Every structure is written in structure tokens, then in C-alpha cells.
Length: 153
Length: 153
View 1 (cartoon, rainbow over the protein chains, first blue to last red):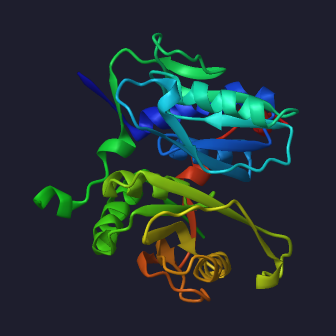
View 2 (cartoon, rainbow over the protein chains, first blue to last red; view 1 turned 180 degrees about the vertical axis):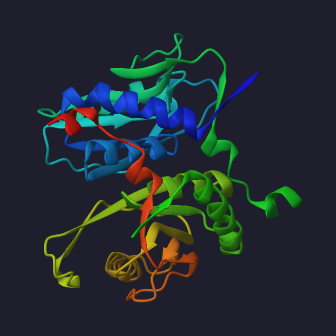
């Protein structure tokens, strides 16, 4: 049921995403940890954006209620347009929560969101996305890196 | 003179680095933007660390004097051991500056640093590193992602 998403897939899709978002002329990237980190890095390089910041949420409840999300990290923007980057809009709760937080707290700044995958059942639709997710996506960063000490235990 | 560093190289080296740092039992990763982002993501997955934060420096002078470095981003640690991650200790100025800042501002927390590459001429030697850099390393994230609109201009 898992669909492995290789670096080669990522390279091709990320280049499409970079070209799709180019018109927005983002001056900073806000990366959602952890899932958005590799994509943010690649997009920042491709778009020549040096201002890359990060934010993190934690969910304390399995029922996936928005109220349970807690935000970690503080952003400081001295720009007009920020691209918010995550790997996938799955339930969409994280992205919806963060976008609402940003709109409330940073008036005067335009935020747009970009992901590689978007699920039709997501409660939030990113401004830019490449693939519709129909299976469980196993990103290469989730599969390719293993601590052998953990395996042995 | 440039040495391309592919994803396959990265995958192999990062797995070695993950296993080398495992004994430190880091509870959080501080990623140095932008260069450390992809490595931080991979290491966080391999080490099962969810608390990933980021920090950024800018150099306003080409003479590479330490006084010219400015730090962006704020960290909040509720842990005892933090791994600071960057791609390369080249001049070493960024890492030295950040490690000094962390030691001064977060007493009681142990910080260790990890990079893929280390140059012998660096003014700072990371606690963990994999390769000595003898050429100009061109990381795959610097080469594989291109905005075609920029190319056309």
C-alpha cells in the first residue's frame, strides 16, 4: 500500500513546483518541520532565496482536532511575500492551522503555500501542489536513513 | 575543480553520520540554514528526532571576519542535548559563531556539531564529520534545482 517516492521523483516534481511558484516572487520560505525541510532547501536553492525559516507543530491527540495543535518556533519577516512549504497536505490540519496563524499575526505580508502532494480529503488546499496523493506516500527521507543501533535493539 | 556530491553519496555518508552521532543521544536538532536543511531532515528521520529547529547567519562583508556575522532566528530548547547540523565546515566561521552563541546563551544544554564535510583550514572542527573536503563540493541541492525563468532572463 505504500508508494516509495524516490529522490529522482522528488527532483523532477520539485523543479516543476519551483517553476510554478516563480511568479509569486517569494522573498522568504517558511519550512514546516520536519516534512518540509528537504523540499524547502531545494526550492530555496532553485529560487535563490536565502531567508529560510522554520516552524513546527505538535499534535497531542489522535482525533486530529485543530484545537490540539500546538505551534513551536517564532518567525520574523522583513519581507512582503513568504512561501510556506510542506511535503504533503494530508489531513491538511497542520497547514490550515499555520496559514491561519500567519494571516492573523503578520498582516501586510502575503503568504502562499506549496506542497508536493495534496489529498482530496485534505481540509486545506495548498496554493501550489504537484501530485494528488492516492496512496500512502513514503518519502525517500523517511525510508533511506536508518540508525543501525535502533534496528538492533 | 567542482566535485559533484550526488544524492547517492549523501545517502551513504549521512547513514554513517547518523550512526556516529547516535551515542550522543540528541533530543533536538538545530539546523543551520540553508546548507544544513536536507542533512538535518535526513538525520532527524534516521535518529527519530521530532524537535527540529533552524537558525541562519548572514555575512555582510567578504573579508569573512567573525564580527560581521549576524544571527537570525531564535531557538527554544526544553532538552539537554542538541545536535547542530550543517553541510560543511568550510571557513568554519559560521559554525564557530553559532556554537559560541549557543554555549553563551543556553547553559546547561550540551551542544555537539555534525557536518558531512570538514576542511582542514576551517577555524572550527565539528564534533562529528565524515569527509575531508579537498575540492569545491557542489552539493546536489545546489545543482539539481533550477528555475527556468531565471535561465531565460
